[in-house]
Image (cartoon, rainbow over all chains, first blue to last red; front, side, top):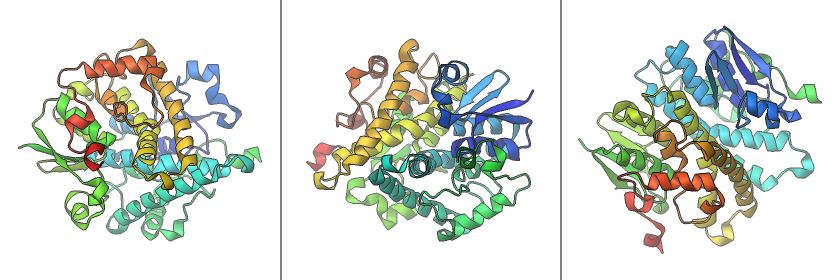
Length: 212
Length: 212
């Protein structure tokens, strides 16, 4: 039975789950969620898909799950242990998934949203500036960590990589300039060279051009 | 061999790890980190404890680990599977640990820090207001989730509970008023009634009174 992922192209959190499904070569389909049209706030989405209005949400047989990191861990555990749960490095993998959710993607997602998807007159500039400061500290940590290794948590790619890259391939400005971070830049190139890698706007339906 | 937890009382993230150690009745000692004196930025801390300057950091024999959620998961997996890794509910447990790191504690920790531990003239009020708005949305989700259950992810307490409560017992104001959230309030009382439960300022060294 095909795994369903409720997602939309602009969501870096959804991309983390989609990229894991894609690189594990699982049988899955993206189901478009009209986030910008308010679908995640609808009664139907809350009762049938996710009561918290979260995207991504995964449906795989009896299992329904939200939170990209939990979805990634479940997919690993169930289908693709090479991506992070079989390894001696499983603690290190989960540490970086949590670090990403705590320190990197949670700031990147909000900064990108505020700077690009909120009308200019409503943009809270001091908040964007503050988030960019926190992001810069996170990029510094990640860049230093990648100086002497190819992948974040093991000798091969894991969900730690597919989590931390969640917002880093998007073209919209939010304070991440890839060429400023040499080791992150090379690591992103390695990800792009993986067989089956796809850009978020190619892997999931929905992108800003649709709404232009 | 005694497990060491590098921590300080004011850190809700450290509390999550300390509370897991405490409720699992493990042999552990808190090692005080002088965060406010700059210890996590010191060369010694970065080279000997954690290169990212993170608190909490756990040391257990050969294992050194940071990120509270990764520490909690490791402790569960190694010593206390009843707290979340043995269960049929293990996906649900990890989902809530990630939700907490992503949506609740990351906002609560920063809001509390900015409002209480930054000199008044340097406080970025628009940022605090923004974070409180996001926090309110998170409290609403958690309160609704607890309306018809005693514990967050299973019939018994798990690391999902010990994660989500990380910042909720502290007295400093940051937008959480316990009596405003009926179901959260009752759930916190259930936690406080667990044998061996302790308040963060009783479980770990260091509290604002020391620096007054």
